[in-house]
Length: 348
Image (tube, rainbow, N blue to C red; front, side, top):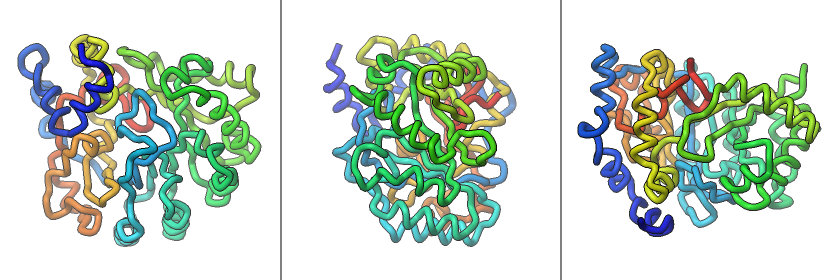
């Protein structure tokens, strides 16, 4: 078996990942499109576009083992102010898009992050920031992020794979848990996650191995009890998100010999009821360079939206996008397994 480092090099490109996903398709595992045809749900069509999820850069201060973005300190892809301006123009021209979900990498590392947030809020949109927590303590210039978030009433969504240090650090890096807890306490001090403040703090759980998430509601109760008991931390909701078999997680599955077993779990757990609520039906993902995708996962596989005229944020046409067929591949089993999964956790 190749080393993980070698496997990461092998699967650095989107075509290489798609080749792996296609390798067992139609032989051991049915094509995802065939599953949808059996349920009379193909082609998968969008609902009303309500969310613009914007990846403003792949640079990150962490290198998490499960990261589907393959983000890290060495990534140079960063959204320019010109592309951000195109996003603001698209929002201004499409009032039906009510939420902007900012992601990365660590979105805060984009030098125009605060300028962009201010511009979005001027257009009266709800803003979600996917903060990795440790960015707050990584440099003095980020210490005021909790106050900045509060000043714009930003919803904060943060990954915390476990309420124990060992499991979190194994997935996200040494010392990450300690800094994450300190950052959560800082957010609580500003009112985030506290009753009656309206300041939303949600956490994200990703499995550490080749298995599906447990019941989201039960896991949330356990997190709330343990984080309060151990660290006096409060939060609003926990999102349990299934790991997609792409990028670093695909590397892990192949290197550990778990790829086929994991795909089998996803296929066996296919839930037709989850199909109607997957995030690609009401969300468009914007890449750091402005290109459009049906979801953040398709973005990492370079599967652009099927309507070429609206393939870039500068040419966004909601009416055309709402008529498109959503681009599908084998990784889509991840969003439709069990209770389903999206950037907002379970969907059923």
